[in-house]
Image 1 (tube, rainbow, N blue to C red):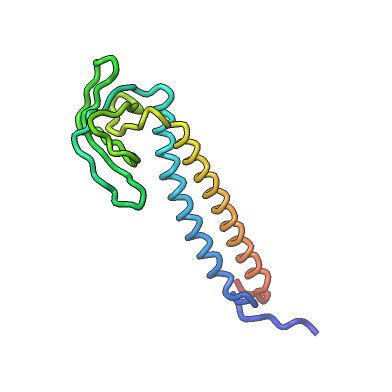
Image 2: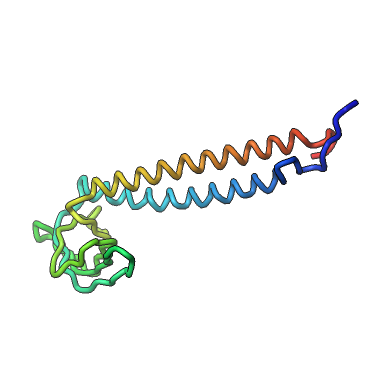
Length: 161
């Protein structure tokens, strides 16, 4: 006697299509995070290796209001050689509020985003680590989604799609 098939799309663990949809949504969220981390890491690498060194003359800062002190600041950038001055340059996520000036690097001569000169390597490595973790998570979620679809398709009665 042939085994009875369950209704299309259902198995003992629930809806295979639903699991695939959840997997795709989570994978897209992970991909968006990787792009955000990756873009910041690329800018930091460009600033650290070959960027324009200089000083940011701080004009205003905003307290981000988190548990640990963090600040976003804006000001005027002046290159170390004095050939470049840019207004409204931003630097994000400072842990100590600067009083007057900060040693920074710009990724290029046209950038309005500066990075602290002291610790670009740690930030790049941290961003890279989180990107790798998110990539592994996205792969696992996509794998689970593919497995869910495979199980759903395998359990369907023949002649339906």
